[in-house]
Image 1: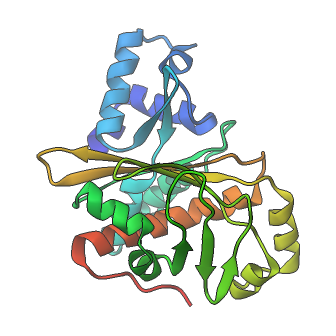
Image 2: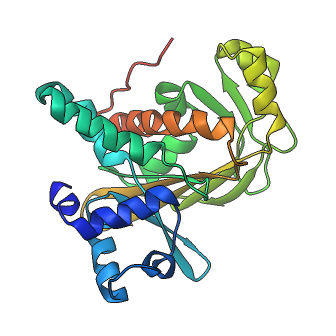
Length: 262
C-alpha cells in the first residue's frame, strides 16, 4: 500500500476519485497529462494494493476508492504508531470513507480466506448473520422473494423488501429494509432521524463474490447504491459496512465473532 501511495500520479488519481467516485478510465484520463496506457497501469497498481476497487456497469469498468486496507491497518496496529502516523492514517481513512462524490454508491472490497460456498452461507444463513450482524433474514433467497428482517426483537416486512438477484456463491442483491418505528426504537434512532430516513427512496445492496482459484481466498465486493444526494441512509451505512464486513471476515477465518455493540 505504501509503495502504491508513493507515486505522485497515483495520488492524483485517488484525489480525482475523492472528488467524484465511480469514474471510468476515459473519465479519469480527461484533463491529465498522462497517456491512457500510463493511467491504466497506475490504476492497476492501486487496485492491486486494494486502495481502489472496480465494478462493471455494462461495457464500462468504474473505479471506486476502497477503505478496507486502511481499516485493517488501523484496527490491528494503530496502537503501535506514533501520534503523527495515527493522524495521517485517520486522515486517509476519512478521505476514503467520507469522500464527497457525485456518484453516491458505497463500494467496499475485501479478501477473505474462505470458499465461495462458506461466504454465501455467511451472507444468507441466519446462524451466521446473527453472530456478526445481529440480523436474521426470513427468505428463500430466490429472485423476487420477499425478505423479512429480524433485528433486536423487531421484525420488518414490506412488499418492496425483496431479493433482486440470486446467483449462489457468485452474486446476491436485495433491497434495503424499511425504516419502521419499531426498528427505530430497537436501534435507538430518534424521531427526527427516522423521519429523514423514511422520506428517502429505498436503496439496495449487492454482494459480488469472486473465487481466486488456487489461493484459498475469495474476493468480496459490497456495492450499496440507489441513494439520494445528501442521503442520511448513505451517511449511516458508510460507517456500518466496514464493521460488518470485518465481523464477517473474522467469523469465517477464525470461527469467532466480534462482540456486537449493545
